[in-house]
Length: 189
Image 1 (cartoon, rainbow, N blue to C red):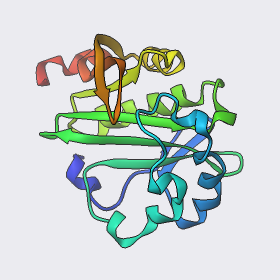
Image 2: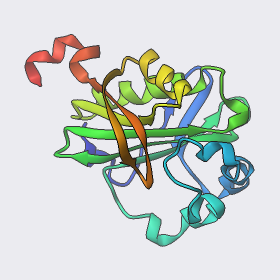
Image 3: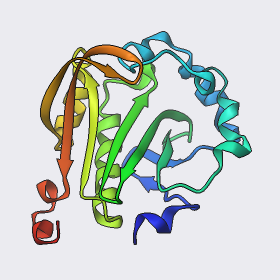
Image 4: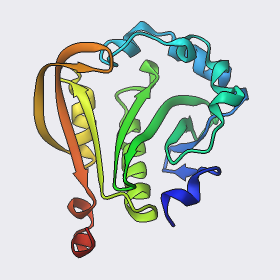
């Protein structure tokens, strides 16, 4: 399969405790519960946007265009409640993509995001042609740094007083290559 196979129908990813799936209008109340939490934006690089404050806007026709990018809701398997979001986007030449994620503050600290991240990494490297995933993380966000490192990402550098989304801060760059996790694919890179 390749990225173009997922232009319209996005896959559902399952882990032991989570389901990563497309968001649906009935998830609006779940999203509203935690998207307004100011702590969520401390290291996010920007303040809450229109879609954060009004999650029902995610389901307008303008947001339903076919795309190679992925935006999953992270649902708890036990009750199907959406407790987070995950993105794979800024895809370049079908080879490299950025990942971003966030989790309801009430659900943090339980390894859930590491579980979700490992699932997304596995999907990207085994079911698409992506060869590299990367992200940027505010240096003060030690929890996210630990999550990335547990999933195999390498800290590749530090940008001092750079612009991360719309904030000026020091931030780390993290990356992961398909060959880091799947060495048998080294000759195909």
